[in-house]
Amino acid sequence: MNCRDAERLVTPYIEDELPEPVLEEFLEHVESCPGCQEELEIYFTVAAGLRHLEEETGNYNIKGELEQVLEASYQQVHMYRLMKIIYYAVNTLAGMGLLSTILLQLRIWIRP
Ligand SMILES: [Zn+2]
Image 1 (cartoon, rainbow, N blue to C red):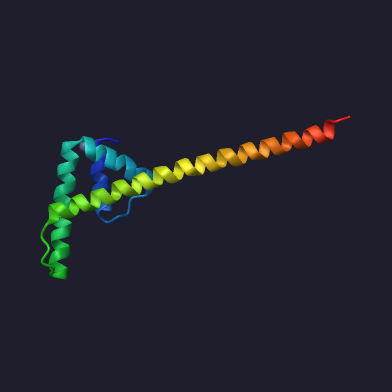
Image 2 (tube, rainbow, N blue to C red):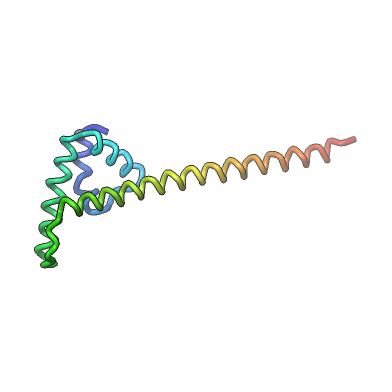
């Protein structure tokens, strides 16, 4: 993912609209790119500021808020990875189980 892609995804990210695989790439890029990190901070600050104005809440720790949101995103990506690993593991086990069942069945059929 390059900066252009990342910049395009900043608003959908803030609105929590990024699907998992894109989210992961986006986070990876933002983490390693100070320019896009700044971009995200600016957009997030504006969006959060507007929201606070609407809600009239006294919480103006926007930077801390962004950190919380990013933390939640990392956890989400982490969970997604874990689910993927479990999914592949189960799939592999099921495939192996099926294969050995077929082989056993074949042995029964082929036996003279
Ligand atoms: Zn970038």
